[in-house]
Length: 412
Image 1 (cartoon, helix red, strand yellow):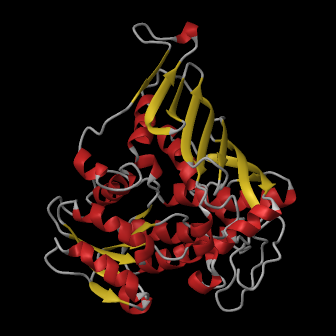
Image 2 (cartoon, helix red, strand yellow):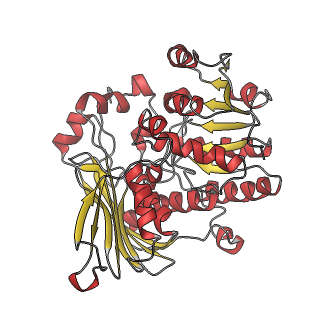
Image 3 (cartoon, one colour):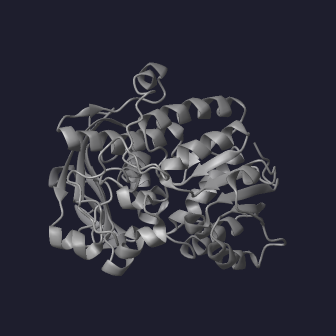
């Protein structure tokens, strides 16, 4: 661990998403980005300009092996391809490098098990793993946590989390283009349930409850819409029902593309409800039944919470300040000031919701979510390598990526 005034050296692995964290990192005292790894030179040139306020620019690597073995950084932000998150997280942990990993933590159940085992061994040596799930750290979602933990709303019984992120045809074609992204790029094959942490993590963060069971259904897109947006995936919507270890029921989605673009969260409890506001993500709504309204409060009211500290820094970064505060939470954990959230168990739990939710969508049956803190639960899944993402070289994959394959043309 690091003292409060120790300089923490950061490496960034992948500058497509990793570059978005540069501003947040440079706003935190005693943090220096000392190395980056990126194979695409245009991304390197674009992002190196962001280090004008840093005394020295980071060393640039193009190959992972040289980057990880360089000894130039204490912690790494993994912003590489999703199917390889677990692989490089394990590599870094074995080298004694702290990990802040972009979502999602693992692409297969076997990867999730291996990651948890490695993270446990690393933690015994003082090496930390955390996932860079930024949505719980937005101002409105942080406020939901504060409200819920007052206890005055009672116990959570039902909650909903929505992350809806449609793209216009131009951007969709860009992300799905084999000539730009590569024929077997993971984004082209992302099953509709897999990217679920933006929907689920704010609820877990607020309540401390973990999913224990999942069942999912999907809605297929129209042929015309699929063609217009140049997609390989036929599914437009994936919805999952979850039960939790506290006895609640949750409804969350994965990467849903139907309009309108929005994020929304509701926690409905025995004595009241707290939620963000549809269409106005910075606002919070508090509501009670008439007979449960606390003395001195209105039965229903809306307000816009404000940051109590680091407001200027948070407001200058993306995702409602989430990019800044998720990085700050990681640095605070490295200094021993807090525990990381999501830790490796939370992160793999969310990955399992997406993976097993997809299995449920394909075969119509519910699946139990393992408790990744328990070796007996992990043992059951240690050899499950079902994977919807094609091998970069051969294109082979062992799990369907869509409920109905799309007969795409060569230009897709």
